[in-house]
Image (cartoon, rainbow, N blue to C red):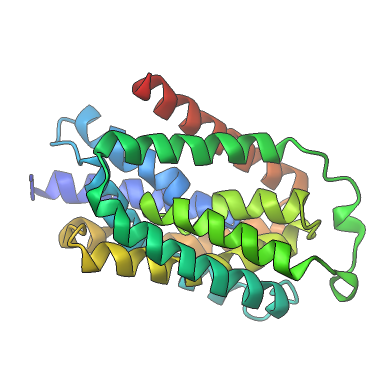
Amino acid sequence: MDWSIGWIAAIFLIAFAGSFLSGMVGVGGAIINYPLFLYIPPLLGFVAFSPHEVAGVTAIQVFFSTIAGVWAYRKSDYLNKTLIGYMGVAVLAGSFLGGFFSSSMEETMVNVIYGILAALAVMMMFLPKKGIDSRSAENVSFNKWLAAILAFLVGVGAGVVGAGGAFLLVPIMLTVLKIPTRMTIASSLAITFLSSIGSAGGKLLTGQVLWLPALIAVIASLIASPLGAKVGQKMNTKWLQWLLIILITATAIKIWLDIL
């Protein structure tokens, strides 16, 4: 692995860009940083990371970026504690299982699981979401056990690719549970933080983490994620939804082109 100043700068900028965008749209960053870490270093002339190595780095990065993102929303009314409790515990259990057992998977299978999750997320983002942003924070209700079951399933898949799962949890919260956009973005960061404990723990226990790239990504995330969250709080919710759709669609297409 190249440890030059240029390599360190490239890793930092990749993580910074991915974390800024993820902070804006309320995801942990793996959906964006996974393909960036997989494809950008070799384009710049550096040694490529393997899918397992990328998943390990993003798992650690997501853990810290979601802490920073939640901190940015701490004084708002958008953190729904009931939603965070039910989905957070379930996604934590699922992501630990996915992260732990992913070490025995073929690298191609890790990419396939990422591609499937991204494709599902894209399809769900196009489901109708009429009227969800007209609901006040006090009047938000949802099926708690359905939320927990879906969060567990998302956690298993997300744990495999080192993600917190927010790229799937966000469309589930918007389209299935009918949670308002800003509450979804804020609460998903807290849920993803709990999920990242599981996926990062599974990766660490099975030795899938490269420490220097992970440390660089964490530093970039702690700077960029809260900046992105502050920008996202001021943006129109429709723009945030479309930005998330575009990001997920682009990465899903690239992954599937490589797989096929």
